[in-house]
Image (tube, rainbow, N blue to C red):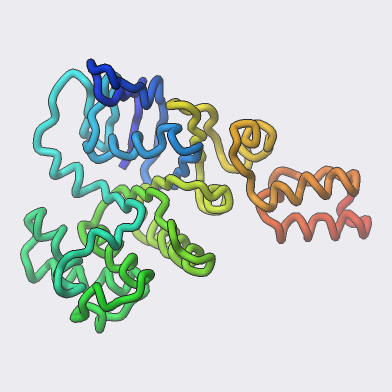
Length: 291
């Protein structure tokens, strides 16, 4: 499902003494099946963009088109259910939204709310519980008897059960340990590939942005400052660091080795520590040399 954002602007508490410009002149093309990361400081507008993707917020001016549905400032939107069915949003700490007495009921809640028959919803529950790495045995358990990581997987399963075409991830690994973060991000990436999802990730992790995304949008003070492939964005680490953001570990290693050894490491290898090590090893043996 293609997404087009044109001259998007959003103001909070408009026509009040507390009016605040949150987004302005935001333009982006997100092609169907792509994986896009949105990075930027807190307050740069990342979460405000996300809330426009399923109609939680409406543009002050400009427009956003998701598939064949266009939302703009000129008309009040009605019947947003089809849009919200197609755009699944995983907010921070999604496990806080669990409330049913069993895992199965919690997973079925979304599909039932969108008119899916009970039996079909139960079939979907059995499918998605396995997609998030849990067995069918969990369906009969109370979500409140599970670990924090398991609860998060159940909450994610509830979103997947609605069969969204777009998956929006707002800091989905917040509060998890390094192993949990890696497992969750790998799970999302596998789902992205297997189901052909259009995936949009808001993250503070430059590692995740560089590892998984096809395209990165860099936000600053309410607008898109830079956009491009991960290798393009991090080819000039100074511009990212200049915004007060970090760069991936591999990019820092590349800069350190180039300075210390006096060699140029190609951009193609710059986002993988293993590739950098391999290239430097070959260069030092005289097999690679400078390129």
